Image: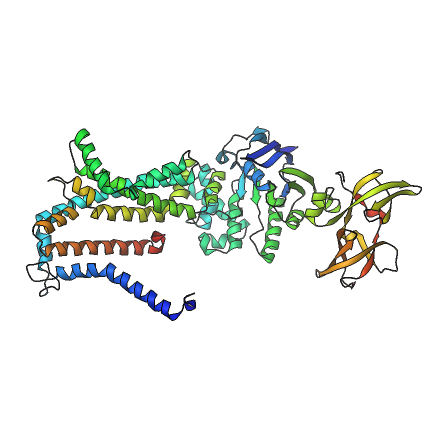
Length: 266
Length: 349
């Protein structure tokens, strides 16, 4: 197929691809480079080479506790969003539900609704009926925000799966619970893991809802980084960002090793 | 005695009628084909029997028990799907074991032993630990077959059992299905759109057309005497010739639409009729011989025999002839028909 394009189109296409890659990777590269500076200020190019800011971050009570908060929230969110999203996707794609299209729209709406509005709404709701923002409130907000990713990935995998397998299981005497266990969940597995991965990642670096629901006790890592940048931008910000990039790469590698990325990407 | 009874079963999807009141009684241990073109309702009927579709009206009983409202998991029937529908993450052995596992009557070891035994029955015990994706289509189908028969179902349903196989595997599978049927005596019902598959496998062929039973007969009887215009056309074995029968001094004569006359041995009575002529019961002869005047349109070589398409008035007839006959297209010929081989359609003209 590629051979059919004229050389000029190939050159233009290559150029466009190069630009896309530059814009995707350059900011990351700048952050990584800036984190390695030996100087006092967040600058590029870095002045000298050192890991001192990494030491700084790892010794910082504030960074570690906000990382711990983020991890707790993201873990709760991953579990809740995966369970609810998977159940919703299975219901939507395998059962004849009345108002199916409407339900699908409702479950996917957080993807398109501005999260700032949702954040304000959550703040008001928890202030009126709860004891104000809390870790649980933030986890709840993130669950709503990330559940559509799970619904999407699980529904996509199930749409490709052969529905005759579940019918065959029925004729072999499998009731609803056995069919879920032996047919539908194995069919949905790739989508569930992909959705969980997205849910974790989105929650871990989400900043809008976290901004509205932040309290002195509940400060996530992105909020900590943001606050630091606002008041005293040190290269520690770059170092902690680099650590976040590394963590993401590690998760991707782990998924690739255990499953194969191709399964997750579909 | 009827074992599986389908009583006036109908199915409508919105405004389309897939099945229009079908009744059918199937004896214990018989091997029955549901034959018909796509959209005739045969797959819908199979799915209704399996419980995967609910009939709009009608009743289904097995061994006297009404199963119409029973969910598929409690019908104790087995179905082999066209796509095989093997559980992709389970080995051949685990797939075959699955129905026993769902019944939960024996321990795991006994279930595995029986699964292995059934795999051996279809000649696949050496591939027990393979996953479906590591097996060929033919092997996967054998696993599906083993899985369908392991739990001793009351009725075995097969959806297009040979359609996904190449010519040689089809023959193997055909022999295998017949041998299994003889050995286990399972009441078997299968769906196919392929008339050869139906005629070669089944004791009895039920021909469906537009949601109704068109013909229900043994394979031999159906081939010899299609009986209806649809059957004659769908089986491709016979020609339909509209004629007017007249009583004459020496019996009956059929007058064709183009005015040619054919002497008959017997006739259902005077009036407009449909004459059914099997393609091998028409003999081609040179124009100097007696017979109906016709012209060769095409000659199709079939190996041991030759099929001619012959123009007779406004009709096109199929004629099977020995391969040594050499009539090129355009040749005028005479068609000779033994009056004893004339059959009549059961329907009106």
